[in-house]
Image (cartoon, rainbow, N blue to C red; front, side, top):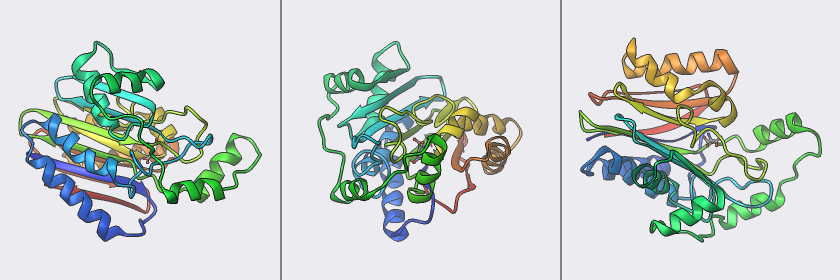
Length: 280
Ligand code: ASP
């Protein structure tokens, strides 16, 4: 199994070595899986449980004090599932997989997605905050101005976008998945790029991609699909570079993307200060 995992794009993390070790372990666990779909979920579960990343426990808190998780996953042959705006769900990527495997739909949202998760045996009702994120939320002082002021303030105070993602292939089948708690102090119920097909995740018979960064420009641009489309012309490394260059030209946003082709070649690029990846 070939695997590439990312731990989000943003400013350099406080403990890069510890996070790198966690990402490397996640890639190693994933490489033991039998199928790419299981591999990407095996990679994401420990990261969703680790407060060092912006997914599951310790994820971004929305403006009403609630953490809501989103995820999406897709395979080379078009199996697709996503789930968003879920309170109390750590393993959002597992819910996305169950949507793909057990429903005729591609995206479930909100309380109904949580009920679906519970009915499918995915753990719910977890407190996704930590002492640190509760303190961060309580001490923050968002401005009263309009949406533009608010976004500038979020950018200045919460520059980390530590969403997690993975792409895996066994040389034939391929899967991509991305999981997040979104952005700090977003409007309650805001859903970003991560569970939107072609934005935060995408796969087809050329390869797969997972994106991270500022969700609104990523969603407008369709970053993950654009990165996979570059595989028509380039190898994964250059595909990732071209995708980020085109994204920056088109939107001025900040993001990172990982790309894997079906032969197992990897690429990663960002226009943020940092993005940690691990490969197996
Ligand atoms: N892309 C995510 C979002 O906007 C944030 C991140 O990458 O951490 O929801």
